[in-house]
Image (cartoon, rainbow, N blue to C red):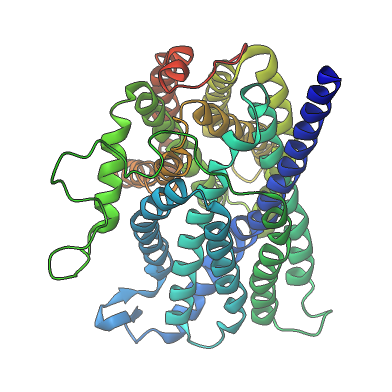
Length: 472
């Protein structure tokens, strides 16, 4: 009877874990349409056109009295959203670990982002300031929500399942992004048939992403559950507190909170991570090669339009192709990781990224077929690289520090992705060639490969206090 009871409890635990995992997948399904339809395709050109409508005769807008070129307003808004996210993520991550109540924080950030995205429907005329504000709120909220979402992974999946679970999450996201992008493109390209203007069609596409995000976020919020941290460190601020040392985020004398409390919390998190140098070593490798990945994603359309003379419709189809194939790529690399381990599979993907860039350097102009081949290559390695990096990092996080450490991971993903665009821009400025600019990004994958290859992941997992899976 005792054995039967144990088996029944184990089966119940497994069923509950599967239910949570399925709910977890649906947050990626919910929010990925924001990244695909809003950030990648529609918002940048539309917000720029709104800013140009409000610009003076010299092409400048003046938010808060500061002269800004209308064409730069979108980029500056994205940068400001990253700064806001960097300030907020460490605070939210530490609060989530300290209280064990991640779900209310996930709900608040998800619905704040979804509401801001839905409100983009009202970006008509010259309302560029409203557009910038909504972009900052939505992008920062998305970063915070993704940090909390990622931090659930080590809690809902045992070590041997994490590569597969993480890969399925990314696959869900890319499938969702592909589906919604198809619907949006039909509306956008055939807006006359639907009796709406091009601008109205874009605003409907933007708002639909917010409604999709908020609607499907209900599923993970119903299925995921909060857990009290089992770590002895839970309930404390990161890092050992010396007697008399002020707690990060505490009130200063006179009852005033410091303006830099976000940076103080980040500094406290980094101090704590110094006790796990191998985790930091992985994070450095990820920061570098992920910067290369993000730069390829953001600059590929410029390369296609300016260097290869491809039309806007060709570029949109290429984006859709990347989304579709990233589903298959994420699932395939998840299976490869079960045989070869996550680290080796990631290293293999970095070699593939290098080959893709080298092939891109030699692409002939005016040949969309070969650009589609390049997009297919990017799609096949994109999802898997990101999914396995997330699952591998989850093994390196000390128990009870999930949200706090994933805040640093998310910042390296979003907050540090400026080195690649800087190198790309400088190379083009010095050489006048986008081909030289695109091939310069190989450096990120070569350096990232070398740094990751040097990380002894089994020892890193053991040092973090986690069980080492048989294949890693």
